[in-house]
Amino acid sequence: MEDEILGLLVSRRAVIRGLAATPLVLLASGCGSSASSLTGYWVFRVPNNDGTYRESFFQLQQSGEAITGKVMMGSRELPISNGTLKGGKLHFEVAMRFRQQARTVVYDGAVQGSRIALTMQFPSRRSVSGTAERTTREATLPPARLPLPALHDVPDNGLVRTPQMGWNSWNKFAGRVDDAVVRAAADAMVSSGMKAAGYTYINIDDTWQGERDKNGNIQANRKFSDMKALADYVHSKGLKIGLYSSPGPKTCAGYTGSFGHEEQDAHTYAEWGYDYLKYDWCSASSIYKTDEMQPVYQKMGDALSKCGRPIVFSLCQYGLDDVWTWGAKVGGNSWRTTGDIQDNWKSMSAIAQKQFAIASYVRPGHWNDPDMLEIGNGGMTTTEYQTHMSLWCLLRAPLLAGNDLHTMSADTKAILTNREVLAISQDRAAKAPKVISQAGEISVVARPLADGSAAFAFLNWGDQPTEVSVEWESAGLSGKRLRARDLWKHQIVRVPAGREFGAKVPAHGTLLLRVHSE
Ligand code: GLA
Image 1: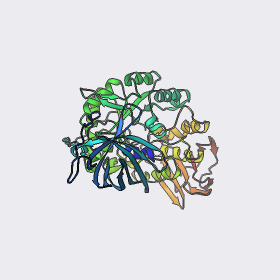
Image 2: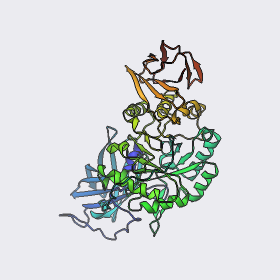
Image 3: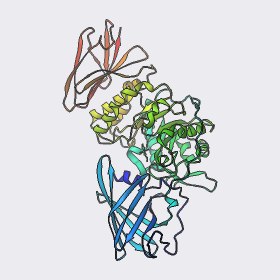
Image 4: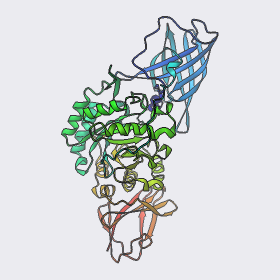
């Protein structure tokens, strides 16, 4: 929760080029303000531990000891309450809503000459500190829009004919990802057997970026000493490597985005040897409208297609504007269909249930992405993680492990590397999975496979173990002899043809069968 609030502590509204000079005198602005009044615009910067910082803006109004105004975080403008300035001590509160929950963040600080040393305290009592300095209203505004290209179809890059498999840093490491974490993930992908099972991409998510150099070239921050050397290392393991940016000026965590530098960044990625780009809408929302996403994403799709290196293009804009209808046209190899997954049953199952209605929009090289895997992160049971994996494989979703590969348990490894289940994900038949029966909290999902067999999942969304049954004929299997395998138990299951098949499925569990009909 705090990480999300911190993620908003950025300028999605201003292009920042290094720390602004500290004014030597207070330049008070606003009607009726005096030289010592806090009335005016302020930029609040919180340093990260990597040479970068996050920022937000305040517009303050001082009247005697009372402080009013607003905090501007990205595209959010949040009113200040209970604001006071007494004896140089500033206090105010801001109510924020996250995932339907109201949270109050408390700011306390001391005015020190032309600066305010401030601490932001979250409900958990965790706090972060930084400095607020005067700024102008203009600095709080988003950069001017850039012209958008006319729409055309970006040529298919020919990559990921079956859903991409790999690892992404965000779900487990968020802002703690660094060079060592990425190298360790690559090592573990090989030693755990994941590479042998088909996993290829090692993807660095948000927080690798530093500032641009004087020629506008993006540089990594000090957590990543040499992006090219890192790519070389990952490639030396027989793996591929990915990174992350945004079409806006800032990423979701407040790091430098690609706004106005699309071609330049695509070239840099190619020069460094990167193979995969996740491109996350974030601060682009303060510049462009939702229905302008297509040309915005096309801009990077074009840039990648001209950069001289095959780079998987992964769109991340949370499924807005029916992206599944145009994601492939802009060169997208996959597109997020939802907001962020969380490591719990409610989040994962709610996301999954919405995917079947749009499951027919995928085709080789162009996949719906219901977000990265949470398997092994600790918030679900082994049974629930098996359901998570079953669903992502049935849906042909990208399989990007989001756990710490280095320390994973035997159960986690067994789920991620179950080859019979992975074969469902990577099957080349073009048919989408369908919910063929829905009774109470049980869904039966079927997907025809390339060898004429079919995957059947008996999913129990409910909290109680439940008996399920299916008539094979109504499920489209009319053969005389049926052969079935339980893909989690690695066992043959007796399924007499012509008769109803029944089984007991544990709460939140999935019985996943591959059925051959002869
Ligand atoms: C957004 C994305 C996440 C992750 C974070 C990084 O929330 O949806 O997957 O990339 O940004 O800041």
